[in-house]
Amino acid sequence: MVMEIPTTMRALRQASLNGPQDLRLVTDAPVPRPGPGEVLIRVVAAGVNFVDISQSRGAFAGGPQPPYLAGIEGAGEVVAMGQGVSGVELGAHVVGVGIRGGAFAEYLVLPAAGVVSVPPGWADEQALGMMVSWPTALAALRPLGRLETGQTVLIHAAAGATGQAAVTMAKHYGATVIAAASPDKHDVVRVLGADHVIDSRGTDLAAEVLRLTHGAGADLVLESVGGATLGASLAAAKRVTGRVVVYGLAGGEAAVTNWDLVYRHQVHLIGLNIGILIQSAPRIFADVMAEMFQLLATGALGPGQPTIYGLAEGPKALAELEARTTVGKLALVPVGKLALVP
Image (cartoon, rainbow, N blue to C red; front, top):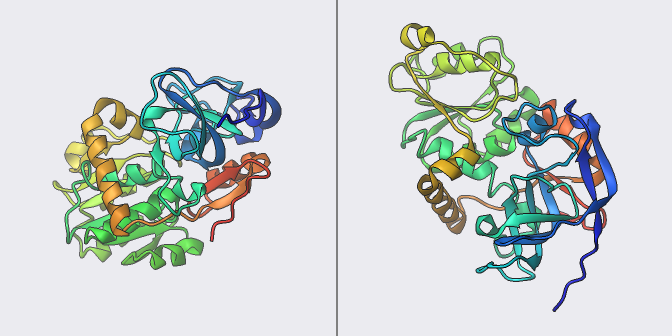
């Protein structure tokens, strides 16, 4: 069966490095063609990530220069394949990440080796997160964070896409979870099983964590906020054996000196970038993905429930994510392909 593919498409093009407000809907973007080892998907849903915001502000190391088609995460139907592709069939529904961007569009090219099948019975948008949020949370908890049963973990931005996955997984592995979120989102993380929920915008977050841990501090901290919160995270971690895994900087950059680590915060400070993990430690990433699929198979992880925006609402979705007013995963869908999540 030959699938008809147009030559142009609707897409969101980033026009400057001034942020999401300069994301423009265009109707004449060329439909990309898959090269060797690549597949072309008809996008059913695209995931919105903090990476997209960082790129739009020029804060993402090695990020694209405007004008560029935005979006790195997409799910949809395979409609064409380049040479040398095996293990993927036309008509299959997959999810993947494209480092060249272009997911906020009607069609997206992805490396065939990097896509995974949408689980049976799931809508495409429910699989968003399988290649970004969920592996990031799992890598931070397990191979890098070395979380063990009975330990305490502090999870920042616990109501976000990665945070919710981390809370769910941490509880599955038998940890005590302290979830940090703004007060209007506390019920969300309580439903996920968080043992303690604290105000992420409170005046002394570290003191609250120390109180909840009877002065010991958290065995592991998942730090995705940055700014002044990084110092609080270091102070909240257990001395000598505590680990702080840093995988985001939504609140801005922060400095840590060698003096801090010797005299103030004697902790393990670990940096995580999922793209670098894939490139530099592929075996660890393979183990993470195998563990994630095991969690899916046992029902410990279930289908995502993203908040759906139309493609034209992309600037609004990114602005709301940047303002931290959203909960969970956000998805953009091309007009006419809106799938309702049950």
